[in-house]
Image (cartoon, rainbow, N blue to C red; front, side, top):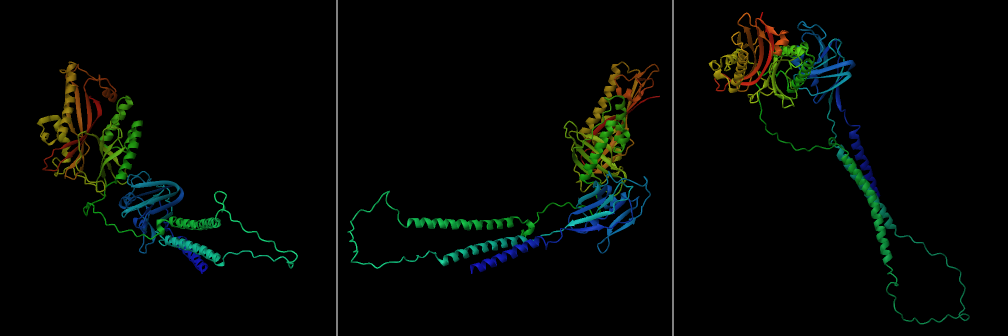
Length: 615
């Protein structure tokens, strides 16, 4: 009967293990779902709608195939459409049945740069990919995002586009089936061994019987009488080393040896079976087992609720870091080549004006005109404008790994969807300055109008107020509005002016030379971004003009000790005088109207802009 149950156990083990294998092979469904996007009319650009990307849940894998260079970028749908507004493109969306369809979208506006705009390198994209012949991009795009597929903006975009999403292919009963099958196999082996053992014990020991007796003759007692037996003499039983062992001891040793041999045979069969069970149990992944995870209650976290009409931030933190890296690389190359045209692709306003002068000085004298570095190692602050239109502005604070280089605060602006961000104001942070509370990068902030009356001083008047502080000192009507750092900076500028006057007097030319100073706001508009305390960070630039002119016809203004004047004018003296212009870029934290705080100086930077001979 044990053999019958062993066979049943073997059959059951085969069925269970086979069912487990079938679950992991034959009966397992596909691991992914695919969607081949239909090709439309040949166009330089293909825009894949976010609805297509989210047709199925999970990570989206985009496969683009075609000969040559391939380009894929993703970003906000509104930004993508704005960038494509002056070009025809294929738009792939979903119809009512959930199937992809392609249609051609006509240009909404006339292109200013003509056809063939290369999408590579645009600051508008959140991220982009470039490969040859075949491109695979793993995406996880939320609502409001789309994907752009192109080549170089001139050639037709590739038409072989495939989207895939992973499918959850769990087989929760494969693991238990493997384990149950292994246990049934182990039980069958045990029953089989017990059956063999019982069969052998039931038959008993088999011994060889005696052979045939030899032939005998009759015994004649008269002829050969039986010998008489001698009496048995009593003697001592031998003991000690020469004595024989008890007769039952060899039998006991034999039984123990046979028992140990049978135990080893059982272990030799049982251990592989147990090992097979362990291998089958541990070889299954978590997807092969039922999941009985307890439901975890969510931990409450503070929630920041954005207004209903809140617009998206101009850039994300990762996007801002990538843009900064591109700007830093371009500016470093322009600095090395002293190429103002190249610098103009990433700089604008007062920053470009100062850089252009630095290049001119460096071309005349290598020791002069060393541009201020733009650190891009650590991004400390990203404050983007929340807007869906253009121009767009972002404020950033960055640091270098070299502690000797001061942190730099700057604003950069994107003029339109096709332009890259350019830095317009940039200054070195003051050691004691502390930024006011700012909105998080994912929320963004608003751009404060130049004539806003909600601030202590309107942004359009901040530059004039600081100029008055420098020129008039304590007599300035704005003296009480600025903090100590701003007053100290104004005093330092006044001290440098006094040093120039003293230098001329020391040369005995005070009676034949007239010096005038004048600080005025520059022609560049201020940039103001709101803070959380209803104030604003305002960046302005001012122009400080120093005029040195002779008071008598015989007097001559010499440029001794002024290499910048010699380099920029190409002369060593002037009979009518010289006018030197300095540019200053400043960042202020301006409090709200009615606040008790003062206007705080955050950053300051000064450059020489030009030296002109008066004619």
